[in-house]
Length: 122
Length: 184
Image (tube, rainbow over all chains, first blue to last red; front, side):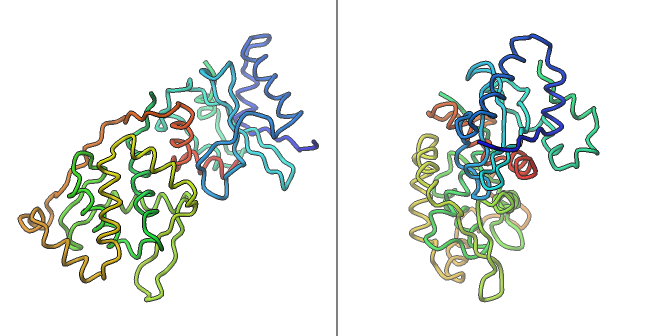
């Protein structure tokens, strides 16, 4: 499957700050391998989305189903996968107020580190 | 046992109500009056504050939630042929069954009230609908500017569904998440 894989700046920042040889980094690398090998098998598509996003957004578990969630966007038509971010909040602790998701509406050149730091994995 | 936020519940409630109309909701006024009548019928859970204002029973928060739903593309907004106002329709009707199940878990009484009021009053002429809303006792006793119904939802609402179902529902109805994913 020849999909072009593009990392968003948020994910790049998260990845660059993962501890070398840590279990978490190994788990992220494993999921990146799955994405590369077979994007349709990577995680599961989010359900109940509006029509323009339905089937495109997939959630992958990092560190098992009770830990972190990683979100990617798969565009089969364009043969493109965008790696969005790993939600730094542990699963089950959803609180939409605190994570600056508006970062994704900015051009990547304009994103400042203060906001990126909010995505660092603990 | 999982839970959803009250904001998610508000959006779910409104989507389900809009989806119950066979051909969409004709106008914001109709949506406001129907939701008000639903909440007068079943008042244990009140998702929106309603005031007595220039338009009669009206909820600004309901209007905002309605705008969020169309912004997220969960609903389609089309101008009415008559030229006044819009028609709101659900984009993905196939999800209605899931919304129905979730609402049933949270409050079978509220779901029943939605089904009955939409069926009974949803298709009245605007004149008859206003007439019906304006004879409401609570409204008649109130003055312009006063609060008719106060929102009373807890911060989190327990739903007897697997965690992933609740999470998918929350994410799919979260404007911040949807906007982020659209721009990704």
